[in-house]
Length: 194
Image (cartoon, rainbow, N blue to C red; front, side, top):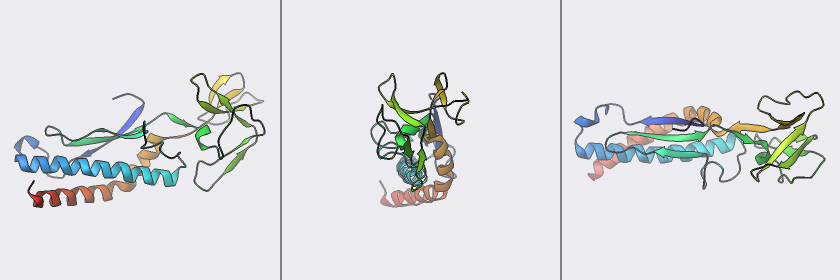
């Protein structure tokens, strides 16, 4: 697994530790229940994270989403993984009304939903990779925030929270719901006699 990702594992159902001893029907049912619970966990986590942080629409689970299912359970391993990217999110993604390079006079950012903050000295710049970044020039040369990255003398790129950091807190918030769903799904599928 790449070092820039954080993963959480849903480790099957309680009591199903030795899968080599399981009946094929029970194993198939457990695999389906774990995978359904993983999809649900990804969806619940993304919704909760978007309520906590104003991530752009589609940023978490859209194409190239930063919160993805990186492993599904199979017949040899009943674990599944949801992975959140652990690189800081550019603060430019949180600019209210968008960020246009060359525009001076500051920007307004909204990281926490409903709480917009004016940054009079910040401005948008085009980065080497073609993306837009939010920068701040300091007179003292000191880093303006803990997550800021120096790109030139007295010039810093600004960042907000990373997906893995928010997911790490959120996964604890949704754990009980996901575990209950997985148990109910296992029971439901077992009764269907697939």
